[in-house]
Image 1 (tube, rainbow, N blue to C red):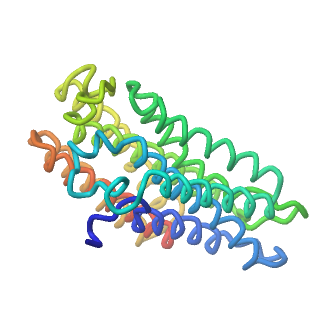
Image 2: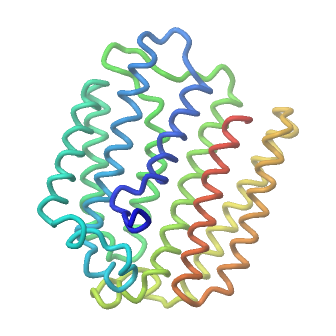
Length: 290
């Protein structure tokens, strides 16, 4: 039964935590006081907010998931709707409290992300592209939050060079576009259930062929960006391992396009979505060596 439990999605949450941890350790500000405590107060709210977002999305998606992923429906089968709401409230409150312990600014940003994820599940998911952009924005915002100061004015990360800051911003951009691509592909995967629920996602609005064209365009932009980044770290920053990883990521994006072009069934789009998750994880690995 373990494979059917998806309300928390441990792998996705682990990627969020790992990404923030790698960034905070790589660009650690040596003068930061209570560094471990700051790390916990920074990373834990992001993970809890994401988990709460998954829970509320599953609550509102029961009808859709019964069509798209009947074997993975949890709410109403393994946990009641009432208890799922209790889990959502508990995760949200814990997230907001811990983020407030970090700083007022973080609490406000975290509350904003919480509301965005709630609105996404309630309404925005069924709108063409807007819901996709919201999730992509939230994904990249998690990385950007590593730059926040705590309530005592301490910061966790610091950039010694312009190249280091460029690398950090580049990953934020990379994360945004990969998340956007993956969200559109997931809408293509879920088109049957979304149609039955009366949603108006982009693939429903323009069809699978039209949605694929948009994914090709965004992926091409990502490939160009990865190519420019690879050239920069190889020639300007004089790095060796990072260009190899980014080269593999670029090749993987070409492979993704090839698989997507041939995809027609839900499970085929699902495999393309998994491939994008692997590419996203490879981006985290690249952070270590860049």
